[in-house]
Length: 113
Length: 113
Image (cartoon, each protein chain N blue to C red):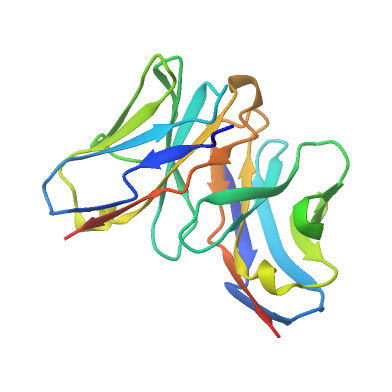
């Protein structure tokens, strides 16, 4: 049973560029949440997707957008990258009726130069 | 509004000694509370969760936590530390719908041989 997978593992971009991160949820899960974890900090909630719609959103600017596909996989897009966007981006999956039980992927390390 | 505070960003214990990691929460609604562990360059793994059932919650790897409403605390304990327990530990709170998690800033546990 595959767990949550994320790609790529590492990414280096320059300021102003755009980036897309990908997440495949645990088998059978239908809900995907994205988190940003800056160095030395706890994860911060970005948004959650279910049935291809954004259900909840944290305090992040519109530069952060997402998408969920019919197979429940998800993408996180960040436009106009800033140095402060450098972080570990974590994806977590769950069942919509049990969103208190989230399984996390290993993350994508984004470095913005 | 919900938040958690983890007291002590770094904790060191001797192998075999008691582990105590502190977490206090703030929530305007009955909370769900969680402890996660993160090993270097990995995602988060759920240790245990409180979801309004028993106040003493047992988790994986010998960890347990007690929900104390009067103290707004959810401290994590383990009777005897093992070298493999060295990691970063995060406390988190959510509402009972589990739609949005709020994480603390983490406690780094070092186990001294």
